[in-house]
Length: 387
Image 1 (cartoon, rainbow, N blue to C red):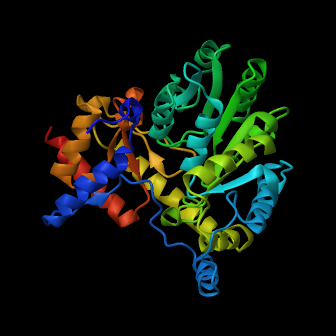
Image 2: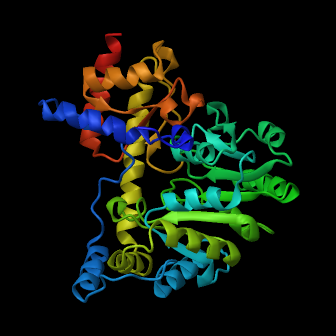
């Protein structure tokens, strides 16, 4: 089969590859502790599910506006205003089936071949995949452990130049759990304004934060008009399978995103949007309880990993991932991913699944019970002792 050349530049998300391997081992009778997939293990709150069911039963099964239902866009604009202190109009919101389309649309709409895009590495792999797909030049900003996986601003200043069209940031961050400080964001914003760059601010984990508070770069002076704010429902409300996300951006760009949505997916599922509306406007108690439980699990897995010879793990400030340094084991990230899966029955991801600068690290998702985390830690300890 002869494919278009651009397909060779398209990457993937390794979590689903490892999940498939783990499922195959389970089918053969092996017990696996799943710490590879970035998915809350909680059920969607019932009030959200019931809202979607009611919409379904009253016939909300038809096409809707490409940019999303007006009521949901209004609710999201109000929510962004309350949470981030940004005045937003509904016309500046585009609702999409999951948050990934916002990443894709941002690069497709703003970046030409040969333009440069700065993105975090290690970072969510779809960033680099889409940059390469459109023929742009990926310019990684390395997230280093000694900076708690924030930007090294001296390095960042050297990366931004007249060819930079887009800067991608993600805070709290996948895979490291790192958070950009307000001072970091202020410096990024100053350089974006100086070089007339757009910023794609991936804030899907903004409600899963343990210390301090979330800051959005879009709230800084002069940044709303050059920022695409990306958020969604999957992580905050345990709605991964619902496929619902959204972006906030200046209305002229929102109009272009809507054109892209019309061409790609027509619209977002109608009755799902009613569930999203309830998520935004309904009680947030279950979200707070979920975050508190994630924090408890974080402390368990960080303490456990730091007790294993060859492992060194920072305590993440947000999201639900740990990114331990495993260089003390003398083994590569890829080796340990395979070894722990097959030897210990623990599914994890090599740090290199998130870019070349993830070598020497593993990512574990602690979206699993404390009981299972303890089982995984015991298995890892025993397996590493055999190396």
